[in-house]
Image 1 (cartoon, rainbow, N blue to C red):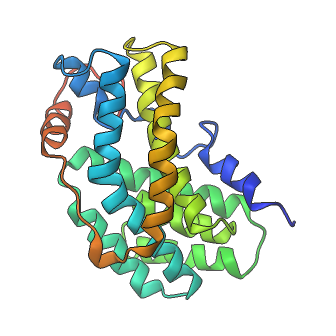
Image 2 (image 1 turned 90 degrees about the vertical axis):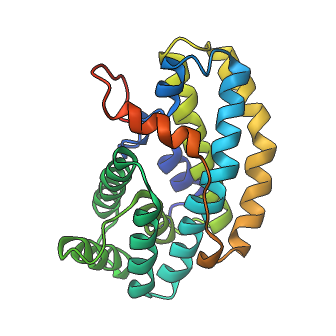
Length: 233
């Protein structure tokens, strides 16, 4: 089936896609509970901070480099990227959620694709996960999926940043911090950030990855021990 890559881009970015990403608040729930986020501008500031200090310099580069390795059929490089990313996630809740979402992504892609060389590559990586050589983190599995569905690296980066933003905005809606009109205003403010980063990230390599969100990390660790939680993270 020759389906436009734009269709698959919309498919993977949609909250209807069962990856589990939209059951996460990205740390927002804990910040709201501690009174650090109260308005739509607070939500916007939080998303921008996470994008520029975590997703763009780490998750998105991992996504981009995975796509390059998948194109070269370099399974060993993907395993290395996967394990490196997993080791950088200090919060247990975040590590586990990334692995659950990643493996669910692979399962969905295997179900979507008819038998061909591309889903054989997915199966090969799944075998590496089963043999404990890899863990299957979300940006790595998303990179493999995007490659299989012929989505460009720039588009894949936009998709990741958009999906993250939507998951946090959706969490803010359900937590009662903002309303639907506020959510669209926040997305409009983020559009230029996402567009600019999608052009620069594909020029980075795996040696460029870093992240620095200590305050959010600390509150996410506290979130692990909360008795009542609406979201996984």
